[in-house]
Image (cartoon, rainbow, N blue to C red; front, side, top):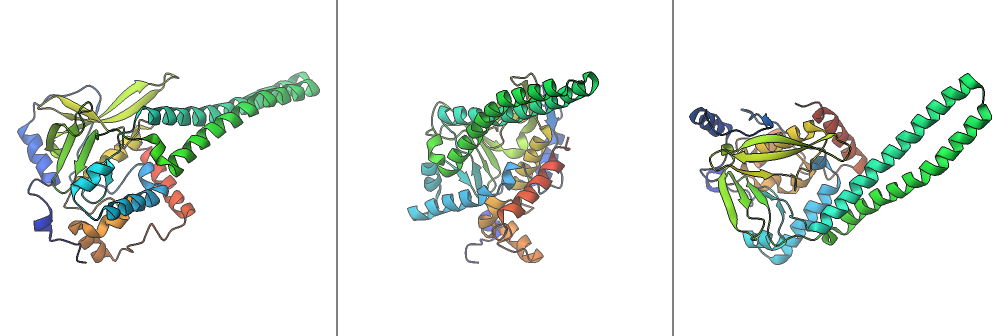
Length: 329
């Protein structure tokens, strides 16, 4: 327990608690607004997160990053500056991937979406041709038509499946292939309560450092290639007019409820009156955060709750969370 500091010594006076947001809203009723769906702040933050936050592979990723930190023989911020990524009890600073990463992620999305679309087209064609065969009696011709459609569609679906899973495997087994730029895009700091926006053109140059409660959260939508709305989570600072999309940690999605869950996750992560969100990647860091360590001890939480589970057990919880999230508004 020697790693567990006293809360009064650990958290800065600027650390976030919901009462600070309430007071700020009362003092700034006429603040600048943005177009889009503005998400509310919670007076009692919720222990929630996106489907990705509950991913089983996050356990190994977190352990790998912690091992890299330990290899340097230090725990100061210089370690994480060199790694250019952080996800622990103190700070969330997602990697700022290079262009090659965007290409790989796009290929992954095309492969996944295209594969399911191909299967859907084949299934619909099978149903329609079968119905036509019942009415016109041309069973043999209909059977040949179905075979022809399958010969055309299944190879395409297989290629798209290989594209999807191949890119996914590449990012999991060899994440360094994605590369990272010299500096991050943004950072959340639980210990001091600040949200930092960096200059994307000048590595580590801060554009804005402000208390998290001074930001409003919005869902921004834009059409995808099929014309369907795709949503992004964005933080807007009314006083300066600066805005920052959080795509690096919470990717755009056509399920707005997932980003509502992301916003709940952020609020809970920053709220030092509550324990950290109980997600796989943060488990190895929970004992280092005073509020979280005290809550876990009080509840008798198994310190290896996630790590003792099988992949199938974690994925079951992950899917249950996702089904609840997509209904959030």
